[in-house]
Length: 175
Image 1 (cartoon, rainbow, N blue to C red):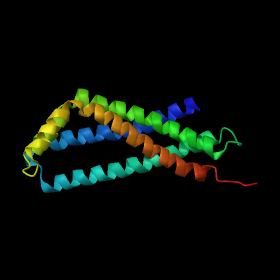
Image 2 (cartoon, rainbow, N blue to C red):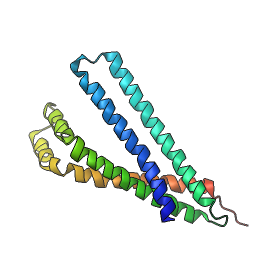
Image 3 (cartoon, rainbow, N blue to C red):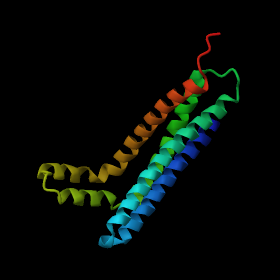
Image 4 (cartoon, rainbow, N blue to C red):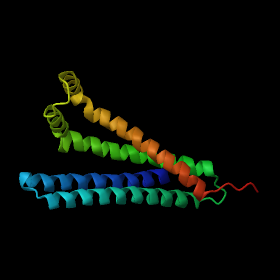
């Protein structure tokens, strides 16, 4: 089970990492245009981002279904709970792969991203000074917080998805 789940986790994590890389490249393209970005170019970039997100979401769902069905086909007597456990394990491994890549991105490639977000908050008048001070104290811990929260979110999402898909792959057969 671990071998098949590791392969599925790498594939699912790879799709999410590719989406992260495309978003980073998209940010570089829109950032290199600076303030000269036309409204139409901004709209096109936003639509492209939405289309990529939808493609990633649907692609990950189909990949999870594919790997779970492939694992279920290895043993005709396999029950739903084993298929579900496989899906949950694949979700955990893919969450770790993607979260590690996201951590590497935010600490090595774009460490200024959290500082830029904090600077953006400073420019907004509705944030009181106490909240900005609290954000400044947490900013150094954000990559670690992001890693663990992203891992938990991706694992929970994948576990719920595998619970739904396992019912379709191995339906109950009372006989």
